Length: 291
Image 1 (cartoon, one colour):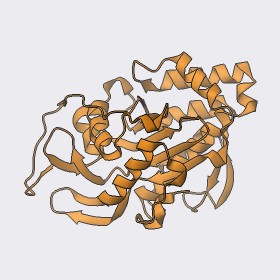
Image 2: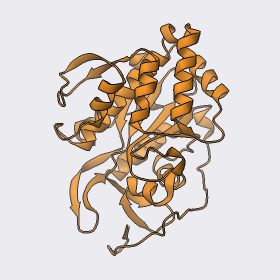
Image 3: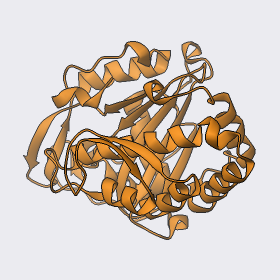
Protein backbone atom coordinates (compact mmCIF):
# COMPACT_ATOMS: atom_id res chain seq x y z
CA UNK A 1 0.00 0.00 0.00
CA UNK A 2 1.43 3.36 -1.03
CA UNK A 3 0.50 6.75 0.47
CA UNK A 4 0.10 10.03 -1.41
CA UNK A 5 3.76 10.91 -0.82
CA UNK A 6 5.03 7.50 -1.88
CA UNK A 7 5.44 6.12 1.63
CA UNK A 8 4.61 2.48 2.25
CA UNK A 9 1.43 1.96 4.28
CA UNK A 10 0.24 -1.13 6.09
CA UNK A 11 -3.35 -2.27 6.44
CA UNK A 12 -4.58 -4.34 9.35
CA UNK A 13 -5.78 -7.73 8.20
CA UNK A 14 -9.55 -7.89 7.91
CA UNK A 15 -9.97 -4.13 7.87
CA UNK A 16 -13.26 -2.82 6.55
CA UNK A 17 -14.56 0.53 5.39
CA UNK A 18 -18.06 1.99 5.73
CA UNK A 19 -20.47 1.12 2.94
CA UNK A 20 -20.96 4.15 0.71
CA UNK A 21 -22.73 3.08 -2.46
CA UNK A 22 -22.98 5.55 -5.34
CA UNK A 23 -26.49 6.78 -6.05
CA UNK A 24 -28.21 4.90 -8.86
CA UNK A 25 -28.81 7.37 -11.71
CA UNK A 26 -32.35 7.44 -13.08
CA UNK A 27 -30.83 7.18 -16.55
CA UNK A 28 -29.60 3.67 -15.67
CA UNK A 29 -33.14 2.34 -15.34
CA UNK A 30 -33.06 -1.23 -14.07
CA UNK A 31 -29.56 -1.99 -15.32
CA UNK A 32 -27.69 -4.40 -13.06
CA UNK A 33 -24.01 -4.58 -12.14
CA UNK A 34 -22.42 -7.81 -10.94
CA UNK A 35 -18.88 -8.16 -9.63
CA UNK A 36 -17.37 -11.55 -10.47
CA UNK A 37 -14.35 -12.45 -8.36
CA UNK A 38 -12.20 -15.43 -9.22
CA UNK A 39 -9.97 -16.42 -6.33
CA UNK A 40 -7.22 -18.95 -5.78
CA UNK A 41 -8.81 -20.04 -2.50
CA UNK A 42 -10.91 -23.20 -2.45
CA UNK A 43 -12.49 -22.06 0.84
CA UNK A 44 -14.78 -19.49 -0.72
CA UNK A 45 -16.45 -18.74 2.60
CA UNK A 46 -13.27 -17.00 3.71
CA UNK A 47 -13.79 -14.29 1.06
CA UNK A 48 -10.10 -13.56 1.33
CA UNK A 49 -6.94 -14.40 -0.58
CA UNK A 50 -5.62 -13.47 -3.98
CA UNK A 51 -8.17 -12.45 -6.61
CA UNK A 52 -6.90 -13.55 -10.02
CA UNK A 53 -10.11 -12.52 -11.79
CA UNK A 54 -12.01 -9.26 -11.32
CA UNK A 55 -14.83 -8.70 -13.82
CA UNK A 56 -17.69 -6.21 -13.70
CA UNK A 57 -20.69 -7.55 -15.62
CA UNK A 58 -23.14 -4.82 -16.67
CA UNK A 59 -26.57 -6.08 -17.78
CA UNK A 60 -28.53 -3.36 -19.52
CA UNK A 61 -32.04 -2.21 -18.59
CA UNK A 62 -33.67 -4.15 -21.44
CA UNK A 63 -31.75 -7.37 -20.64
CA UNK A 64 -30.54 -7.48 -24.25
CA UNK A 65 -26.84 -6.70 -23.78
CA UNK A 66 -24.04 -7.66 -21.39
CA UNK A 67 -20.75 -5.77 -21.05
CA UNK A 68 -17.88 -7.51 -19.27
CA UNK A 69 -15.21 -5.17 -17.90
CA UNK A 70 -12.01 -6.91 -16.82
CA UNK A 71 -9.88 -5.14 -14.24
CA UNK A 72 -6.25 -6.33 -14.48
CA UNK A 73 -5.16 -7.55 -11.08
CA UNK A 74 -2.10 -5.24 -11.19
CA UNK A 75 -4.13 -2.11 -12.03
CA UNK A 76 -2.82 0.58 -9.65
CA UNK A 77 -5.79 2.31 -8.02
CA UNK A 78 -6.79 4.10 -4.79
CA UNK A 79 -7.83 1.53 -2.17
CA UNK A 80 -11.03 2.61 -0.40
CA UNK A 81 -10.73 3.87 3.16
CA UNK A 82 -6.93 3.69 3.33
CA UNK A 83 -5.70 6.97 1.90
CA UNK A 84 -3.27 5.01 -0.27
CA UNK A 85 -3.03 3.17 -3.56
CA UNK A 86 -2.05 -0.35 -4.54
CA UNK A 87 -2.74 -3.06 -7.07
CA UNK A 88 -6.48 -3.58 -7.26
CA UNK A 89 -6.32 -7.21 -6.15
CA UNK A 90 -4.72 -6.05 -2.89
CA UNK A 91 -8.16 -4.73 -1.87
CA UNK A 92 -9.48 -8.30 -1.84
CA UNK A 93 -6.46 -9.55 0.08
CA UNK A 94 -6.80 -6.79 2.68
CA UNK A 95 -10.55 -6.68 3.14
CA UNK A 96 -12.25 -9.37 1.08
CA UNK A 97 -15.17 -8.70 -1.25
CA UNK A 98 -16.51 -5.69 0.73
CA UNK A 99 -13.28 -3.71 0.35
CA UNK A 100 -12.95 -4.66 -3.31
CA UNK A 101 -16.51 -3.47 -3.95
CA UNK A 102 -15.84 -0.18 -2.15
CA UNK A 103 -12.65 0.25 -4.19
CA UNK A 104 -14.26 -0.38 -7.58
CA UNK A 105 -17.50 1.57 -7.10
CA UNK A 106 -15.82 5.03 -7.10
CA UNK A 107 -13.99 4.08 -10.31
CA UNK A 108 -17.10 3.05 -12.22
CA UNK A 109 -19.57 5.43 -10.59
CA UNK A 110 -22.37 2.87 -10.22
CA UNK A 111 -23.46 0.65 -7.33
CA UNK A 112 -22.49 -3.01 -7.55
CA UNK A 113 -25.76 -4.86 -7.06
CA UNK A 114 -24.47 -8.38 -6.53
CA UNK A 115 -21.18 -10.18 -5.96
CA UNK A 116 -20.26 -13.71 -7.01
CA UNK A 117 -17.06 -15.35 -5.79
CA UNK A 118 -15.73 -18.51 -7.39
CA UNK A 119 -12.54 -20.24 -8.32
CA UNK A 120 -11.99 -21.52 -11.80
CA UNK A 121 -11.81 -25.10 -10.54
CA UNK A 122 -15.52 -24.64 -9.91
CA UNK A 123 -16.07 -23.56 -13.50
CA UNK A 124 -15.21 -27.11 -14.53
CA UNK A 125 -18.39 -28.40 -12.94
CA UNK A 126 -20.54 -25.59 -14.34
CA UNK A 127 -19.09 -26.13 -17.81
CA UNK A 128 -19.53 -29.88 -17.74
CA UNK A 129 -23.09 -29.54 -16.40
CA UNK A 130 -24.15 -27.93 -19.70
CA UNK A 131 -22.19 -30.30 -21.91
CA UNK A 132 -19.19 -28.09 -22.60
CA UNK A 133 -18.99 -24.70 -24.28
CA UNK A 134 -17.72 -23.10 -27.47
CA UNK A 135 -15.01 -20.47 -27.02
CA UNK A 136 -13.54 -18.12 -29.60
CA UNK A 137 -9.73 -18.06 -29.25
CA UNK A 138 -8.21 -14.83 -30.60
CA UNK A 139 -4.58 -15.41 -29.57
CA UNK A 140 -2.79 -18.74 -29.77
CA UNK A 141 -1.02 -20.06 -26.71
CA UNK A 142 -1.08 -22.80 -24.11
CA UNK A 143 -2.02 -25.45 -26.65
CA UNK A 144 -4.94 -23.53 -28.20
CA UNK A 145 -4.80 -22.23 -31.77
CA UNK A 146 -6.77 -19.23 -33.04
CA UNK A 147 -10.35 -20.19 -33.88
CA UNK A 148 -13.45 -21.69 -32.31
CA UNK A 149 -12.87 -24.46 -29.78
CA UNK A 150 -15.33 -26.70 -27.99
CA UNK A 151 -14.09 -27.07 -24.41
CA UNK A 152 -15.05 -29.26 -21.52
CA UNK A 153 -14.38 -28.14 -17.96
CA UNK A 154 -10.79 -29.37 -17.80
CA UNK A 155 -9.86 -27.76 -21.13
CA UNK A 156 -11.55 -24.53 -20.08
CA UNK A 157 -9.55 -24.45 -16.88
CA UNK A 158 -6.28 -24.76 -18.81
CA UNK A 159 -7.43 -22.07 -21.22
CA UNK A 160 -8.21 -19.43 -18.58
CA UNK A 161 -5.14 -20.10 -16.46
CA UNK A 162 -2.55 -19.58 -19.21
CA UNK A 163 -0.73 -16.26 -19.31
CA UNK A 164 3.02 -16.78 -19.72
CA UNK A 165 2.79 -17.63 -23.44
CA UNK A 166 0.43 -14.72 -24.20
CA UNK A 167 1.55 -11.40 -25.64
CA UNK A 168 0.42 -9.20 -22.74
CA UNK A 169 0.46 -11.62 -19.82
CA UNK A 170 -2.36 -10.95 -17.36
CA UNK A 171 -4.02 -8.46 -19.74
CA UNK A 172 -4.29 -11.16 -22.40
CA UNK A 173 -5.37 -13.72 -19.81
CA UNK A 174 -8.19 -11.37 -18.85
CA UNK A 175 -9.41 -11.45 -22.44
CA UNK A 176 -9.36 -15.25 -22.34
CA UNK A 177 -11.31 -15.29 -19.11
CA UNK A 178 -14.00 -13.06 -20.60
CA UNK A 179 -14.14 -15.23 -23.74
CA UNK A 180 -14.69 -18.26 -21.54
CA UNK A 181 -17.35 -16.52 -19.42
CA UNK A 182 -19.05 -15.54 -22.68
CA UNK A 183 -19.01 -19.17 -23.81
CA UNK A 184 -20.60 -20.30 -20.54
CA UNK A 185 -23.24 -17.55 -20.73
CA UNK A 186 -24.05 -18.41 -24.35
CA UNK A 187 -24.59 -22.06 -23.51
CA UNK A 188 -26.46 -21.42 -20.25
CA UNK A 189 -28.84 -19.00 -21.99
CA UNK A 190 -29.30 -21.15 -25.09
CA UNK A 191 -32.59 -22.79 -26.00
CA UNK A 192 -30.77 -26.11 -25.68
CA UNK A 193 -30.29 -25.44 -21.96
CA UNK A 194 -33.37 -23.38 -21.08
CA UNK A 195 -35.77 -25.93 -22.62
CA UNK A 196 -34.06 -28.90 -20.97
CA UNK A 197 -35.23 -29.00 -17.34
CA UNK A 198 -32.61 -31.55 -16.33
CA UNK A 199 -29.70 -29.66 -17.86
CA UNK A 200 -30.95 -26.32 -16.52
CA UNK A 201 -31.35 -27.78 -13.03
CA UNK A 202 -27.86 -29.26 -13.26
CA UNK A 203 -26.35 -25.93 -14.20
CA UNK A 204 -28.22 -24.03 -11.49
CA UNK A 205 -27.16 -26.66 -8.96
CA UNK A 206 -23.51 -26.47 -10.07
CA UNK A 207 -23.60 -22.68 -10.01
CA UNK A 208 -25.20 -22.38 -6.59
CA UNK A 209 -22.94 -25.07 -5.14
CA UNK A 210 -19.71 -23.58 -6.46
CA UNK A 211 -20.47 -19.87 -6.20
CA UNK A 212 -20.47 -17.77 -3.07
CA UNK A 213 -22.98 -14.99 -3.72
CA UNK A 214 -24.26 -12.11 -1.63
CA UNK A 215 -27.28 -12.73 0.58
CA UNK A 216 -29.58 -10.66 -1.64
CA UNK A 217 -29.06 -12.86 -4.72
CA UNK A 218 -31.46 -15.79 -4.49
CA UNK A 219 -31.73 -18.81 -6.75
CA UNK A 220 -35.14 -17.61 -7.93
CA UNK A 221 -33.66 -14.26 -8.90
CA UNK A 222 -30.97 -16.03 -10.92
CA UNK A 223 -33.59 -18.07 -12.77
CA UNK A 224 -35.71 -14.98 -13.45
CA UNK A 225 -32.71 -13.07 -14.80
CA UNK A 226 -31.71 -15.98 -17.02
CA UNK A 227 -35.23 -16.10 -18.46
CA UNK A 228 -35.27 -12.32 -19.03
CA UNK A 229 -31.95 -12.65 -20.89
CA UNK A 230 -33.04 -15.66 -22.95
CA UNK A 231 -32.61 -13.77 -26.24
CA UNK A 232 -29.03 -12.67 -25.50
CA UNK A 233 -26.57 -14.22 -27.97
CA UNK A 234 -22.85 -14.02 -28.55
CA UNK A 235 -22.97 -10.74 -30.45
CA UNK A 236 -24.76 -9.16 -27.47
CA UNK A 237 -21.88 -9.86 -25.07
CA UNK A 238 -19.04 -7.34 -25.24
CA UNK A 239 -15.54 -7.28 -23.72
CA UNK A 240 -13.64 -4.35 -22.24
CA UNK A 241 -10.59 -3.88 -20.07
CA UNK A 242 -10.61 -1.31 -17.26
CA UNK A 243 -8.95 1.69 -18.97
CA UNK A 244 -5.17 1.60 -18.74
CA UNK A 245 -2.30 3.39 -20.44
CA UNK A 246 0.70 1.09 -20.00
CA UNK A 247 2.94 -0.96 -17.73
CA UNK A 248 5.32 0.66 -15.23
CA UNK A 249 7.62 -0.27 -12.37
CA UNK A 250 6.66 1.21 -9.00
CA UNK A 251 9.36 1.50 -6.30
CA UNK A 252 7.10 -0.10 -3.68
CA UNK A 253 4.40 -2.02 -5.55
CA UNK A 254 6.66 -3.41 -8.28
CA UNK A 255 5.26 -3.99 -11.77
CA UNK A 256 1.91 -2.21 -12.15
CA UNK A 257 -0.70 -1.52 -14.81
CA UNK A 258 -1.18 2.24 -15.03
CA UNK A 259 -4.80 3.39 -14.97
CA UNK A 260 -6.07 5.89 -17.56
CA UNK A 261 -8.21 8.10 -15.25
CA UNK A 262 -9.91 10.24 -17.90
CA UNK A 263 -10.97 7.18 -19.89
CA UNK A 264 -12.16 5.56 -16.65
CA UNK A 265 -14.47 8.56 -16.21
CA UNK A 266 -15.80 8.02 -19.73
CA UNK A 267 -16.50 4.38 -18.89
CA UNK A 268 -18.25 5.46 -15.68
CA UNK A 269 -20.49 7.88 -17.58
CA UNK A 270 -21.61 5.17 -19.99
CA UNK A 271 -22.30 2.73 -17.17
CA UNK A 272 -24.25 5.40 -15.28
CA UNK A 273 -26.36 6.22 -18.33
CA UNK A 274 -26.69 2.60 -19.51
CA UNK A 275 -25.22 3.60 -22.87
CA UNK A 276 -22.47 1.02 -23.23
CA UNK A 277 -23.63 0.44 -26.80
CA UNK A 278 -21.91 3.73 -27.72
CA UNK A 279 -18.84 3.36 -25.48
CA UNK A 280 -15.45 3.55 -27.22
CA UNK A 281 -12.02 3.08 -25.67
CA UNK A 282 -9.30 4.39 -27.98
CA UNK A 283 -6.87 4.99 -25.10
CA UNK A 284 -6.10 1.56 -23.69
CA UNK A 285 -3.57 -0.50 -25.68
CA UNK A 286 -5.38 -2.82 -28.08
CA UNK A 287 -8.46 -0.69 -27.35
CA UNK A 288 -9.30 -2.63 -24.20
CA UNK A 289 -10.44 -5.65 -26.24
CA UNK A 290 -13.63 -3.65 -26.72
CA UNK A 291 -16.46 -4.13 -29.14
